Image 1 (cartoon, rainbow, N blue to C red):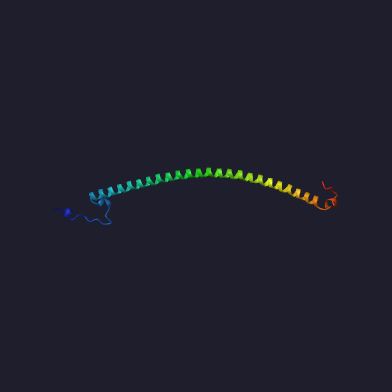
Image 2 (image 1 turned 30 degrees about the vertical axis):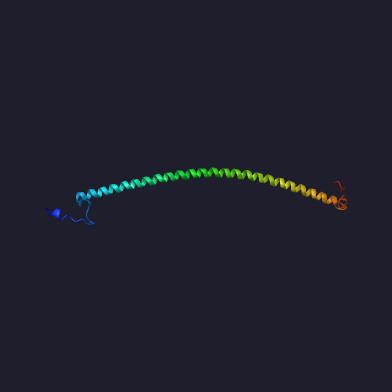
Length: 121
C-alpha cells in the first residue's frame, strides 16, 4: 500500500477546490448542480404564483371598478329623485303657506277690511 491510500490528504477550511481529490470535487460539483436546479425550480414556482396572483388582482380591480360605476350611477339617479322631491315639497309648502295666510285673513274679524280688501280677495 502506498502512503496516499493509508493516509488520505487532510482537508481543511483553507484547502482549495483544485487541491481536493477528484472524487470529492465530483461530489461537490454534483451538490452545486443540484442546488442550482432547486433554486431555478423555486424561482420558477415563485414567478408562476406571482403572475397568477397579479392576474387575479387585476380581475378583482376590474370587477370592483365596474361595481363602483354601477353604484355611482345608482346614487346619481337617487340624488336626482331626491332633488325633484325637495322641489315638489318646497312648492307644496309655499302654496300651503299662502293658503293658510288667505284662510287666516278670511276668518279674521275685519282685519281684511282694514287692509282695504274684500273677503274674496
